[in-house]
Image 1 (tube, rainbow, N blue to C red):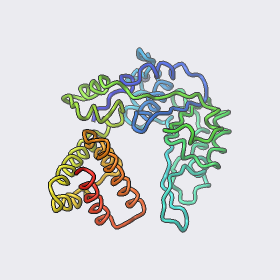
Image 2 (cartoon, protein in one colour; image 1 turned 120 degrees about the vertical axis):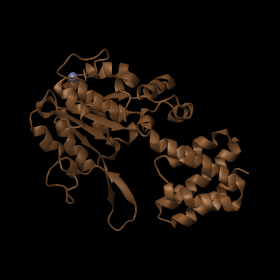
Image 3 (cartoon, rainbow, N blue to C red; image 1 turned 90 degrees about the vertical axis):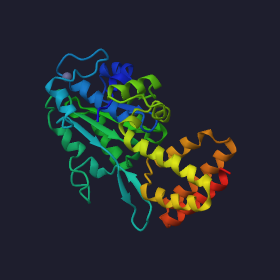
Image 4 (cartoon, rainbow, N blue to C red; image 1 turned 180 degrees about the horizontal axis):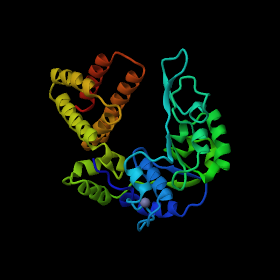
Length: 311
Ligand SMILES: [Zn+2]
């Protein structure tokens, strides 16, 4: 799958990050706006050994850029939260634990490479880059361990923190980082991203994306979710048995990442009143699923509530 290059969607931003000389960047922006792509493009530009592009982006052909394109760059470490189950509780929460930073501190050995050890090694190319995707999930202990590294990074390493909501990030991390917002791209840029990928223009997908490049990256899943959402909404309007039958089908293909948003997108043409009630039904479904309620029953209740909402 060809992704639109970050330079196409976030060129001016890369111009800024290309001349950045500090130790830590904090990229903020809505979910799926393309923060991760930008972070990887920053890592590429800071390691590029060739002639950089018009926005200061990596040249794409030097050995470092080729390593990035192959998805195996020796100077890049991406740290993400894991789902941990709090002892005695069914609820799961996302967390970047201290075990992600220091070796020997992770009981479950979930993290193969640790930030501390990663930064002890000299860069193969120009600069080691640690991308923390989900900075809001850094535990206090992990953040404290990171702070020392951020203040005096070994071998001038670069930290790139990504967060949706800056208010959820531990303030000591925020205060030591230069903040850059990643804003949604224009519809035209998203369209060009699609056409560059060799695809026909798709107005529905472009409207759904609303400038979020991450939607393009997962367009197969998004298209499927949009199709399911339209089919389900149509069946719900047809009759109770159709609604219940489709509820079973929706349960089987349910993708929590895309189906809720796809449903809301399909309902955008409904009256505000109907939309509010449909939203409430969807929220009830999501809470029920999070609380591990019987999924079959939860989807049936949802279908019936939606039937009433869209009457
Ligand atoms: Zn290069």
